[in-house]
Image 1: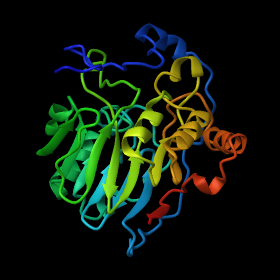
Image 2 (image 1 turned 60 degrees about the horizontal axis):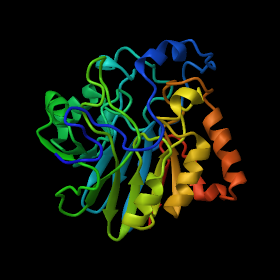
Image 3 (image 1 turned 120 degrees about the vertical axis):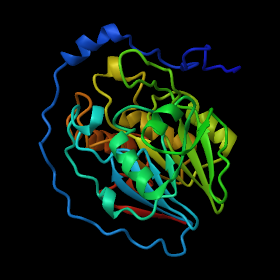
Length: 312
């Protein structure tokens, strides 16, 4: 495969900040970490009706969104387990419960899986979704075998800028600056991406996990402005390590501006303590960054658990 991000064995980021080596992990683990609460209880919120809007986007938690369109019910990076780790039973513990339980989901027709990290790819949840709904899964190259191990049968693997062969909803895989791994020996054997979802003339951008590079300007140039951008704002400290894999809130605001997004919504915060910053810091820093760049709060929203947004 001729590619500017695959060397025949492993995928890589063709530009932007270099990833830190595994030898840096002990230093990362010794970094001071803010203390998070053990549990935050949010009241259950029923899913509102889509009405005549082209899409209704509901924040389930972390990077999981339920996106309802006239033809599809889409889940992004569905994670419902108590821990972001092997089997959903070890690893970073969930502080906030999913806003919608796995059993309460409407029939899911399409799953968008951005990469294979445990806080984005929850195999126990995927097994249940496979048994209940037999959804199509659209994912970057190299993730098919892992998904088939969870019982999923309908899988379409895409390279960056390829489009899935869906009927009513267009799905385009877009570049991200990140990495992949499930264990110690499979680093970058599978690709990572974001997605642009096209429905009834509207565009929804789901960034997955990404560092800040020139990819937002390139996406805007290729795809045009987006109506709704779902952008990560958390898991960014210490910066010496995380800058090559995750945006901070300042980066997210710059991404919002470069995408010319009509509305951006924050994600990847307040659910799992993955890095050093406090649970409230991403939101506070986002508000500061919006003020610095003269972005009104209503143009870059922080969703509450279970909040829904109509895309019109």
